[in-house]
Length: 177
Image 1 (cartoon, rainbow, N blue to C red):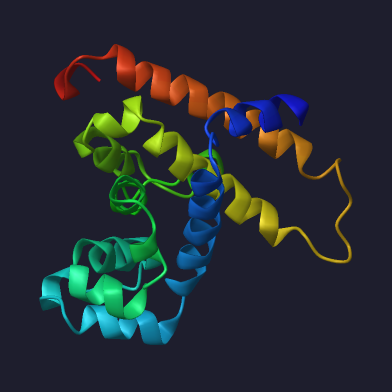
Image 2 (image 1 turned 90 degrees about the horizontal axis):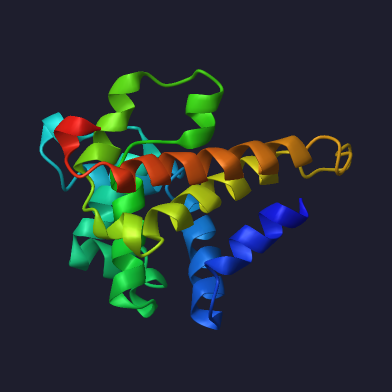
């Protein structure tokens, strides 16, 4: 757990990074709203409409008008942080779901198509940490026993993040990944 905290704090260099993570977590839950998904889907061609909250969020974050109307707090973040959050949701890749065997290998496509700058500027790492907190929060109730239930999640996913990003950085082209 201490190693996890040290690694996480390594990408959280400023107060803006911390606020950005809080916004990221809140926005992720907004995406789960039926009304939010309906509103965004109504602006999309039928073939692009979906119930997948991450994809709906990515579409909303691409559209400046929708973003301002539905996610105004995101607009208060730096343009780079907004782009990092949009890029993360656009990958359609969730490391925890891969670890649980809930997604197919096709879901790596979004990672492979992602702009490589998000590998270098910790944007992808930021996205992955958000997903750890998202699953960790699901266990935080009155029956939660810390650290027995959560420590393996932190350790396992932190290691997986490091390995995955390292492999992606080391591969110069998509074809070689």
